[in-house]
Image (cartoon, rainbow, N blue to C red; front, top):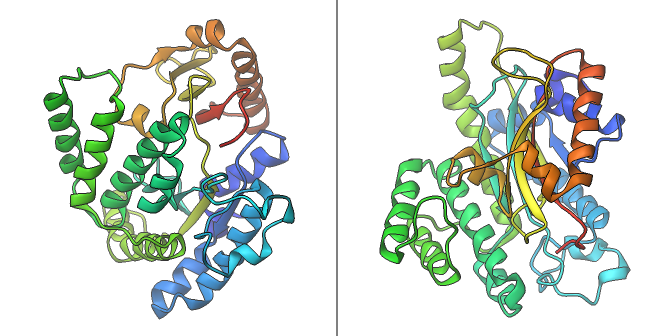
Length: 330
């Protein structure tokens, strides 16, 4: 795989896979495919390809993406879970735009794509999973709004603050279930994504591609004096539920100090959280030493991966991580 074909992060992920670093099942929409769609404005071929790829993700993960009452992808699902409903094994996806040129902190992501109001209601019959369902739905609505609909993130941030204030929840403290449901209902007033997961996927892909080629690439090239055309690939991954339970979490790690370059591993993480919460600093993260106390097996695995990356790539490494430990998948 080349950077020109799958973007800088796509190449890195391929190398990580070759090193046996655990990454979620992934497909990549190549830069040539995104460019072809943008020029033709016809996504039928793209969607035929991505539908087949999502079917593969279903089989790899043992989960369902499309609505259980519809034909299509579900006909290809492994028989081992044919009798289960989608609410039992929901497949949610993350979409991340990656350029053919390394561009940290400027690319868009949509999280928990595939979550719908109906699916939330189905999952919520299980009290142990209801909070996760609503929290994942809130992340989907927020990222959909900012990335696909182009809504200013501050509108969502203001909504979060208003709900916190009304409920008396201090910054840095998680929402209680009732307040989380109110937050989701407020987000639903701002955005109206389609109810069908495949329609969500199509609109998200088209929106991310159109925004890149019509707006973002030109601005970035002008700002940094880049003359070569910048194309975009889309990484489609199965979601890892860092916000699932107390044995889950998300974080960011560095193989050495990003300030001094000193050879020391640095990481911050949040138990029972998504990477999205970490990036927007909605809660105060914990230091790497806390991970050693809470989950020593994860701590030592992370140390091994960071050393492995530096050895292979011959460079300092930064990694965002979400994980579930011990528990079976949702």
